[in-house]
Amino acid sequence: MTQDERWYANWKEVMDFMEAHKRRPSKYDPEERNQWNWLRHAQKLHNAGGLKPERVELFKKLMELCEKYKHVNQWK
Image 1: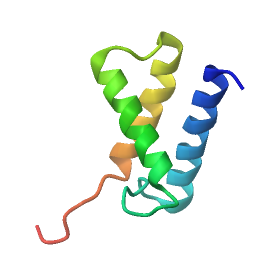
Image 2: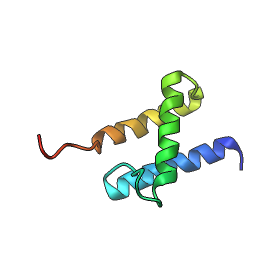
Image 3: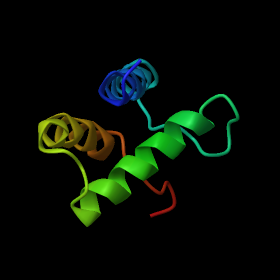
Image 4: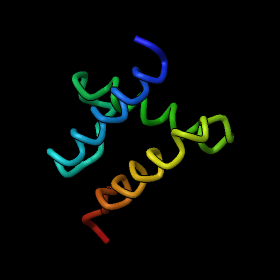
């Protein structure tokens, strides 16, 4: 498996998770930890400008979904 295939597989896994569960992966749940780590790493690469150009559009779709399912403080 190449790095591109692995990146797309991780992207698809996180997208499917968020669409199925209507939330972002949790860093506290051991089963979701890998997805959360990948998401944070990809965010840091994107913010630093290190994300490959062909991945930027897919990552922006992922970030739009993240904003849709962003945690809202219930005590506001």
